[in-house]
Length: 322
Image (cartoon, rainbow, N blue to C red; front, side):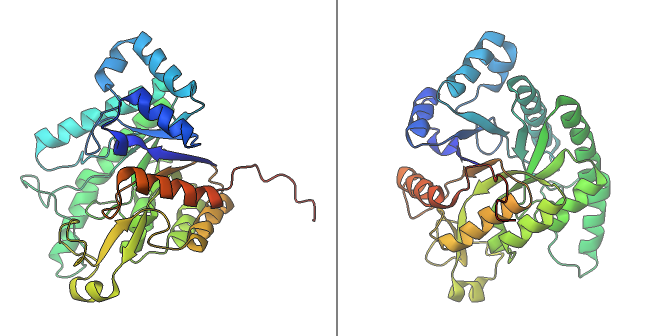
């Protein structure tokens, strides 16, 4: 396995300065935002696609520091009911797939998106209860009319481009759990898989180790984010796990994102890392920092220090004792 980082947290730094910083921290990989919600501070998508010399220099800048690009990420909502928003996100996803192909990056990360509740809706509608039956009708329409057709097309494009799609399982989007991930994969193709982030499993009440087992046995983990979540036992009884308060209201929220080791101890994280290897995932563990109690540098540094203790770097080798 390699330790990496989703570099959007260093968007204020120039690209090559960021690469130097990551190499000095002992990382082996970088995940780069190309647009959508994360922005594209370190990737001029159109400029790179238009100029082969820029493309070559960009790749060389990464490789010369002993790094690889683990994924290009364009988290967005290509199923947004407002067509101009959906079209813009769809364009970024398609261009990112093309860039990944040309840079020989194996994974493009994004969200599944979430449609509205009918063709003329203005806003996404995320059904989270089976009753009243209206919600089941909405979800059926979303999946049959929007989710499966769109990702069937993108899955085919990814397959012909030699790229895998890592959908982050995130509340608010149609694919948000291992079950919804496998449902979409089975309805489309094997190019569609997960960018598994345990932080989103914890707040939904899902054990990340079991999520790794469920998805990994199906070969459906394409990328992995390292981010933690802490649950406040008092506030969760007041607000529930679908707490709609702003992330800035940390004292009152039911849960909040933390850097690795500050929501769950390192034994829990070691179990996750071991489960990843058990199911055959030996790719990149990419740190994502969204901890409101720590600066970017401190939160990132502590995540690196904690993960370096438990990440499994070397190949397994033979079982000499068998």
